[in-house]
Image 1 (cartoon, helix red, strand yellow):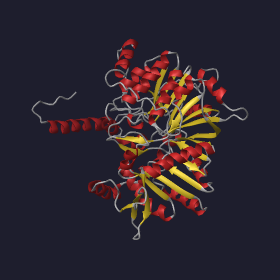
Image 2 (image 1 turned 120 degrees about the horizontal axis):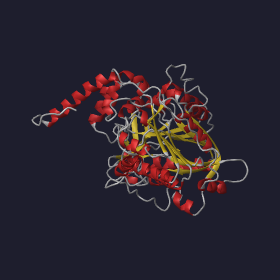
Image 3 (image 1 turned 90 degrees about the horizontal axis):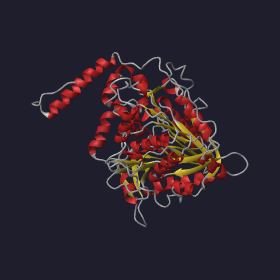
Image 4 (image 1 turned 120 degrees about the vertical axis):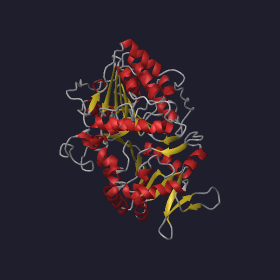
Length: 541
């Protein structure tokens, strides 16, 4: 531990501390490596959840005949968090949780507390988290994992410098090709009979709890025939060689089981404990909070055929290109392959949402095929003002004019209009950002998942997604996307000189407002992008 003399001024002390940390991290980088001979006890989803409380409710709600899957869209953050918590409270045998991000904030700790309470009732809990954003969270996760009914595993972990985001990257400086590849999946399965999946991670900003910015996103409740398939996709990751039990990464301390439990209680209680806002009486689609239906012994779902896909973990981390298998756009079990297959097979209309839009060569080929077939194609994405990844915007803007010339209808989210409409929740001083990854094809097929329309999802990250073959669910998602387009977005068009114009629709008989620069941004934000644009490699975005 380095101690700085009191006479060093604070700014200098801060820079000196970072310099020392950087030198130490560079020293670690030469010797840091993942542990070998790791014991990974194999485990699988429970064979049958039909005899659980949730299983009996699903069976009673399912229509007779062909086995179908039940769905309820979860567009509103309060209802989506509520669904996860209520399923955990009613779990009887197992909870399998897989996320790109479980943040060490009020929302993350609140969910972990609900999972620990389920473990206290004898429920087996398996938590699989990508290690990218776990810096400083080892005390929370190790105390959670100390419960005899809980296991925690991390995907593609950082072996050193784990306390800080910067030091863990510095310690892995010579291992960049591995550590930049991440597990982007989001999945939550209870008793192998009900699930929640979609675009939301577990953090304040996904559930309208952040003071700076919050995401507009989409999840779906899932029940019935496709849930065992989702569980098998979870097992594929859980038992892969690319995940590490947290005990293999964090040295065991001297604390007893009781002390670890007390530490977990201390970390997940107190003045910062989340007291979530209760869902309203109904959501945007007229659905009740899930607890109301479960308490009444009924389950109101839309039943339909469905297909679920997840990229194999080897896509990200196999040691050679050959071991990684076919590229995602050629592998029939990958999310990208099937998204492109259904998009290119559209007959009349596609409506899509993606927070990060960098089509690349393959995406532009898909757009040309779709438009060449006479299919209308509209995409909603983030504006520069709305995006949380300004570098991604550099990649996106390279393709805007091309897409518009091909006849794609482009819409960009407006934080100002989202706040004004109140339709998506009360954002207050926080800005609204789009995070949902979804598509409606021909008003009868729906895609919901974790995959963005960008090179990172195609080349480097693993993804999960589900296709729902239901005109009713398609109509619901069409309405939700329509709300965003109408109340919360600018429509883009090409001006007479070929430049991009942003159209803000007016109400009533007033004239639309047409803007000629990136709306709701200041000069310095735009200038910074101009400086960075030549330096940003598209393949890493």
